[in-house]
Length: 231
Length: 241
Image 1: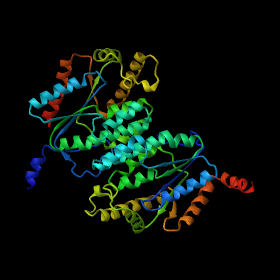
Image 2: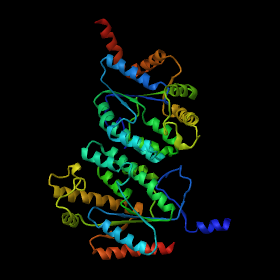
Image 3: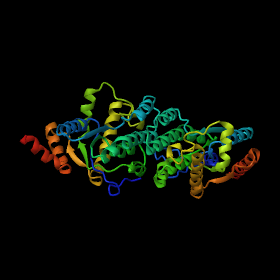
Image 4: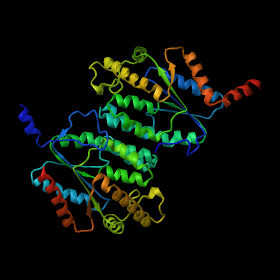
């Protein structure tokens, strides 16, 4: 099941962003997408929990608080597999640059905090190729907390990790929950080779660092820029 | 106090899992029993489960029937996805696993805690066999279902594919798309496809027999004989406890 790049040639590049809500990753990946499209690169963008077939079931389960850690994990894996089998993998084969807002590391962090076995979660996602670049947006929990809470009148049940019985106060629960997810991410940085981006820096500065890193895996972009600037 | 606890605990036994289980479930002791009946469509599974349920209830046991694709949360979603043929094979396997997990946690485990005998109309073995026949890695499937409880008894009602096809035609006038493995492209001839597919599934079950400790039941015997055999094995097991 583990996909190996040696057996089948994958022409495209997979670039993903990870981090807690409010870490700024979605803003950054959208800017990356704009840039690549502007440069004429064939790009496909995909995000967590977005497949038509599964999304509805997950949101129904969330609304009724029906999800257990295992079903939560398996349904997100189903959503992931649906996008992976239909879009991510075939598009990579075809030579696209696939940008993913969250990838398997989200499950490694979140499902494990919810109480699933770490090895079990990793086995399930063994079906997916490793990204060429995995950006991790590092922010202190207070920063992400302020960014999210400022824009939201109310936190949702699972979003706040209320199913973990951390606190009766959704905001307090959210803060503890996100703190634990950050711990899981931090433990992965070295092992999984995540590229850390300081999410407290200016938007432009972060984007610049990302583009430099992307140029390393897409060196042909440098040439393209030359052609564009000459003409 | 301790003594009382021990007395209550006499009938309980720890839940056993195929893999890492569900680590967040603290209360690991249950009183009930989990019995699984596996077998292809038209092998007589539901008839047998009906008869077993009646007898066990008459004997004073509380019985819960469960089956695949019956969870409130996910069941309908799978039916829809199947109709649309939109989802890949890994995706379908995960979908079924999620549906199964939902039933396991919300129906089977609570019933076992309350001391029910749970009769499961199919279990993870069917899901693994279908997926393996469709090319999924068996090891991956085994790990995927590492959260599943190990049943107390597992029966597999075996019917030769050629006999099975006649039973299906007695029930319906057509062969089911998936039960014929039509998505596998084994043959344009639906009859042949059904036979080939059912043989592949039966082969998977034979391969699983040892690893998962399945008891093979000859499904070509008369209904009442099969029932007597199943009932005897279940009664013997319950007596031993």
